[in-house]
Structure formats: structure tokens, C-alpha cells
Image (cartoon, rainbow, N blue to C red; front, side, top):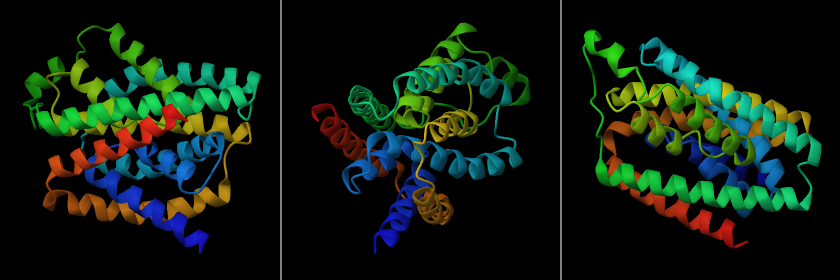
Length: 263
């Protein structure tokens, strides 16, 4: 019975990711902690690999459509992957099951969820501000950030946040990209966000696996649900009002975030 519940949870999160583009971490980690009683460090480690494998499929599909701006992905990874490795080194030194580390994880996760909720609600209220497409002549200009150091800085912040909590690569990543690359078309922003999340969550997830904080049988059950879920969600996307989905999602994330901060 429990096995079916995990598969269903994966399917549900897969649909939400397919519909909204918001990272699975912001929903899957609180579901594992609150509904299934999984320890925070195990929930974070398992969810990182869940996100890596789930988003890998999305990246392949977007790359085929030539919607992944690899230069933007490289800039973000240059900041986020060293930050993830440094955070993993600290976790290796202290130990992820340490009560103080668990407290930092739940508090940081709560704050990350509240930030994600705010970013999701902002996107729902403001709608799609970025252009949908650009001629090739303007694309080179759109690929330049406001300042060369900003993608590295924001990448480092997101890398630390994702390694500690498994949240941040989705909605926070999209919001950061919208600020740093205001001229970049929205499909390419989503493409960059999904593509750079793959190496980041893979590095962080494998780092957690080396700490023993990945539940492999649980990961298999979640993926059994999420991979078909993403397929269904992406096909439903065009028929569902995006603002409604994002508004409901932001309320769910704010509720989960508040609970974790007050734990």
C-alpha cells in the first residue's frame, strides 16, 4: 500500500512540474517529510536525484527544439557547482544526520519554500513578461547578463540552497533568470532553468549518496510515478489556466514553508 502511495506522490509531482515548470524539490521534499515521515536529510538526498533524472528527460526534449541557451547554462553552473561541492564538503565534515544540521536543513527548506511561493505568486500575478521569441540578430544581445559576475553569484546562492534543501533550482531559478536576462524569450529561460538543474542536482545528489542520505528503493518508486506524470502534465499544459495553477501552488508552498520554519 505504501509503495502505491509513493508512486502516486511521484505521479502528482510529475504532473505539477510538467504543468508549471516549478522544480519537484519544492513539493516532493515537504511531501516526503510531512506525509511519509522521511527524515529531512534522506528526503533532501533522495529528492535531488529524483529531480536530476526527472529533468534530464525535459532537457533532451528542449535541446531537440533548440530552446536551451547553453552559454547561460554554463555561466550558472560555473557558480552553482563549486558552491554545491563546498556545501557537500561541510555536510561531510559535520554529518547530515547531526541534529543541528537537521535543524538548519528544515529551517533553510522553510525559507526556500517561502521564497519559491513568492516567486511563483509573482509570476502568476505578473504573467509572462518575457518575449516569446526573438530574431537571431537580437539573440546575442539577449544572452548577455546585466553584469558578467551576477550569474556566478546567483548560481552560487542557488547551488548552496539546492544542496542543503533540494529546493531552488525551479521557481527561484526562473525568477533569477528573468531578472538577469530580461531580453531572453521565456521558452529559452525555462530551457536554461531545466538544463542547468540537471548537473547541479546530479552533483548534489551523488554527494548526498556518498553520505548515505539517498533511499534508493524510494527513489525508484518516485521515478516510476514522476516520469509518466511529467508526460501527462506537459500535454495538459496548454489546456489549463497557468495563473490558476501557479496561484494554488504558491499557497501550498507557503503553507509547507511556514510549517517547516515553525518546526
